[in-house]
Length: 569
Ligand SMILES: Cc1cc2nc3c(=O)[nH]c(=O)nc-3n(C[C@H](O)[C@H](O)[C@H](O)COP(=O)(O)OP(=O)(O)OC[C@H]3O[C@@H](n4cnc5c(N)ncnc54)[C@H](O)[C@@H]3O)c2cc1C
Image (cartoon, rainbow, N blue to C red):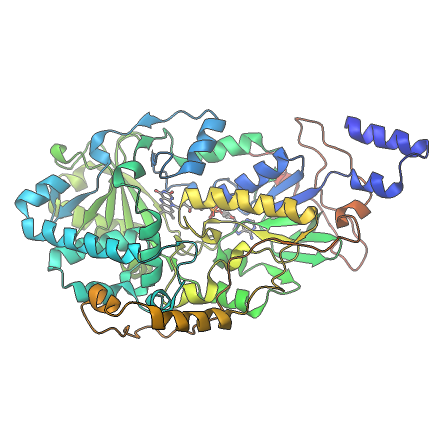
């Protein structure tokens, strides 16, 4: 029992402390749904602020997409500042990355090329790649504020285009185009499915970050090590607890896992959009959110870990870091340190991954082995096994990560950054600057935790006073008049009119949300009305958001998921 609570009880007894003030002393409660890095961060931050937090994760294990995607190579504090801060907090040591992983390399028709090799042995391809990078950099520079990428009509128009059409205009030689396609589909999605504005905005975000910054260090064990560090800090985690419904009312939120209901003051919903679409929300989300759930594009990237007795690739190649292949092999990533042996992670992405969905795991691996064997004849003999992780068809993920398609920034920009009543959203897909990354997931968890605290302090995130989006489009139209002539000619080598190859409804883009101070909250925070709960002892998992019995109208806990209550280690 906390000292504060004892003191409050004593003061009530002697009539010096009102019941309202007593209620206000109650420890605020939150439920975090989703045990990926976003949910873990939100839970950790709220717990550190004195909140009683219960984390519900659908799967038996924690960490979400940081599972097999165990890239041990991570960025420095310039590339991933939040990630590096948490590594410091948890005292997780990293090692400097060896030089050969710090720049991308290429596998062209089975032959390995470092960037330097390419310049001497395939100068036409190297030149074309340089030209592509320069044009892309020009495009990225046209975005002055990556947090508001569609700031004028010219930029807004880029969102209606796809990347493939833009690449066509560059007329790259075939090999260069294959390599560029591979890089884009690995990092985002198939170029034909990707908004040109999103591609430009992401390039802008990373403009001052070199490839060398992106793979500057190695975290032995990879991102699951970070996930476990969070798990160790958290008091209450329930695994194998898939949330099916969230019911909000004026006093709080009930989260249902099958027949069991958990109550809290606030919820952080840290699941990917496809998983969120399966959770029944009461009251329902509005049409814009529903459209975003249905329509937001996720990149496809599935991973195959192929295990060999000994390395089968040419030793000079080392084959570590990002290696872009111009054949159907996708991006390769040799992980000598991962799980022992000589392992290669093959990332099948974009439409290559979509095509292979028709295959079972074994056939998928066979298809890849056939290609690898063509280059490395010992491959079959040395092959010992595989692991496959299909993020794209996993119901808890529904894709690798967010990759806005044409027209989607215009419609859904920063939509999930704004809480809906008592629910704040987290997850890589909710971060404006670093979606699709560990950094984005961590940042989103921090932001959502902050919003929950703000809400409990009386701040409102209601969109009431936000400018209608149509006004944004009108402003964009005015800006169009002011935009410099020749912009599109320079970028696309064509006329100034953007090619309308993606039907998209302009407008209803959500302006960036900002907390709006609620006018003098008349009542104490809703949590204060409830009967006070016992404060948890400092280190022990305890009562916190137990399945609760509620009045008839509310969900009733039939039985706790006993098997899954243990804190996951
Ligand atoms: C193949 C691949 C490679 C990647 N490589 C890198 C990289 O090199 N560097 C990098 O920075 N990032 C990389 N990423 C991205 C990074 O892994 C993700 O951005 C990050 O892990 C996402 O974290 P999250 O918490 O937002 O989502 P998730 O990790 O997906 O967490 C969501 C959790 O919610 C759970 N859940 C879903 N539905 C429910 C429900 N109804 N009830 C309860 N729980 C539910 C899920 O099981 C999951 O555990 C990669 C991703 C993939 C797929």
